[in-house]
Length: 184
Image 1: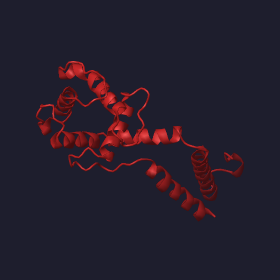
Image 2 (image 1 turned 60 degrees about the vertical axis):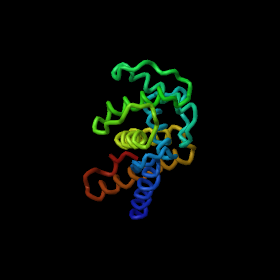
Image 3 (image 1 turned 120 degrees about the vertical axis):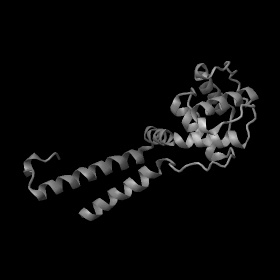
Image 4 (image 1 turned 90 degrees about the vertical axis):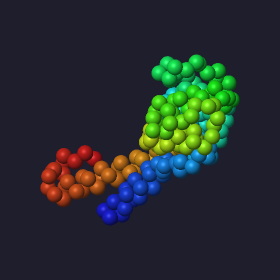
C-alpha cells in the first residue's frame, strides 16, 4: 500500500514534471536548427517580445523574426542602435543588432559586427540561450499546466492527494498528531 503510493508519487515527479520541458543544453555548433529556434522562441515568449505568444515549434517563421526584432528594439538604447523595422525578415540590420546585443551579453565572444548570420554568431546565440535555458524551461512548465488537458490536472491533484495521505500516515505512526487532528 504505502510503497505503491510512494512509487506512484516518485514516478509522477520523475516522468511528468521532468519531461515537461527540455533542460538539455544546446550544442554550440553554429547551426540554426530546430532546437536552437525552439530555445529562441521560448526565450522570446518568456521576455514578452511576441504578442500574441509565439508557437513553440522550432520552425523559423516571420513571427519569430518579428519577435526577435521587437526584443532587440526594446534593448536598443543600451546598445546605441537605430530602431529596426519589424518586418519579419532577417536583414543585415537585424543581424547587426543581434551581434551587438550578443557582444553586450557575452563580452568574451568578440563577435564581428558585420551583419552576416554566420557560424560564430549562431554559436554565440546558442551560448546565450544556454545561459538562459532555465527561464525557458520554467515557461514551458507553466505553459504545460496552463494549457493542460483535464488528465494532467487530475494527475497533479492525485499526486498531491497521495503525498498528503502518505504524510498523514507517517505522522500518525510516529504519534506526533492524534487521529482526530488529521487534515482529511
